[in-house]
Length: 182
Image (tube, rainbow, N blue to C red; front, top):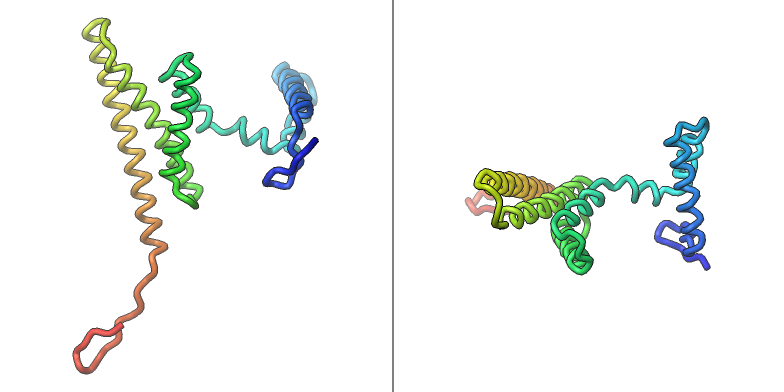
């Protein structure tokens, strides 16, 4: 059974999704092997499946996953909890109707947040040599600077957008009696 998604495309049932994935994997393997015509077939397939292309090309999502894996390791519960926290953070930072640039900076800020938290956890570890501990601390300080820069960039953009959309007061009219009007 198919259902409509928000783009009025038919959403694949699990069996259709499995077949599409198999076809994609085969096309990709053929294209990677340099088989003549396979790259054109892969491009045509992806043109017909824009949601697959969008998901595969979402580098922010890939970076979030890598940083989450680095921070939490193999613990599935913590991975789910951290991913949920990052999604909440992004939703709060983006607000109800973010611009494309705002979305980009929100993603960047979320990734910097994960990197900063991971570096702080690493710096808090005991053990190793003094140079290793100093390296972990420098890494945490560097991640903190990147996180602060990301949040500052996002806050600046949001402040500028807020000023740009704020209603402009009308012109002040001259009042011969010296009262300010307008």
